[in-house]
Length: 237
Image (cartoon, rainbow, N blue to C red; front, top):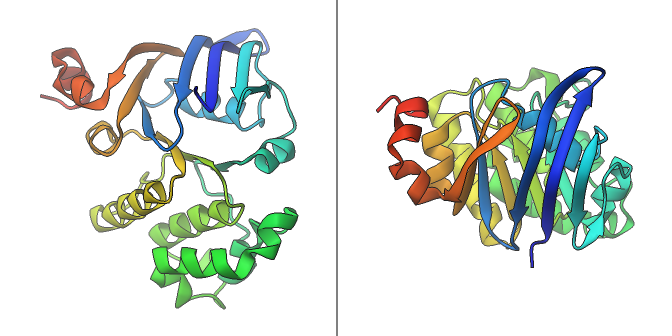
């Protein structure tokens, strides 16, 4: 049974429709890639899942419970965390304060904060060296580490990660994907939204390709990577 099941969702901003009849699912413990060009609708779909935007139609179920239009705080409490594109850190707070914010309003996560903090610092040692530093003074790669670490403090069962490597140097892209691999080993289900089609499909078990607000391809990641049309459109091969 899918722990996240999206059935025929659509989204309108006023009179403009940006998502048409999208369906996808996540099984427990797997990594799924959602890929596509810029403005394909990937971020809008992620924002609907996490409750930041209310769907215009269709159904989103988390652990079998309909969460369509549910308050984002309720969705976090159910076990889903979202690392947004753009990070949305608190630049004038320290690294430690930003990390702690991920657990601040969740009693269970707050009680386990020291243990979870130790784990995220193990994932991202650079953050451990900068706990007293203001978040706004970090490099772009370090800020991305911090955004992921903050989301993990909620101890999620599902992690949505939106464009984690956007604008990062290749060495930082490797750091982020290595960390995502360690997160997956902990049994956390991952939905990865990423323009780097090659990296994301190599990392994931399954993938969905989105174009102009619609899912146009789906399947095992290896099969998608071998598809001639996808290789030509997204990999330049």
